[in-house]
Length: 101
Image 1 (cartoon, rainbow, N blue to C red):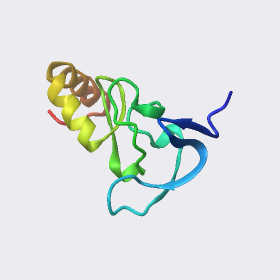
Image 2: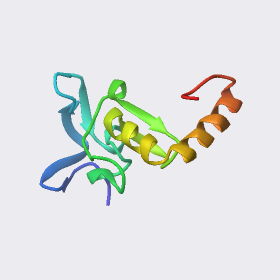
Image 3: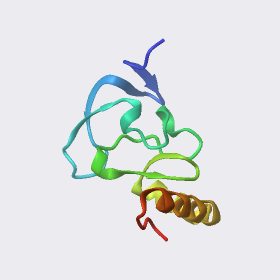
């Protein structure tokens, strides 16, 4: 089975489904594939909201690992502050930069 087309919670999903970013007011064209979903899986997985966003409105956090919309990422960083601080420290050491210290 592929993820070209399916239905999750009554909504058409998959990389074959053309759509626009779910952020109110954003008209960026996307598809409803896993590359655009908040939470790494259709329906959002355990921690995401399951909505679909363009790359401008998704971010990556270290714990739980994955891509999330800014709203969910902010909530998860509050929920898991110690884990995210450790991840940010390791990431900064890798890239030599400063990410949310």
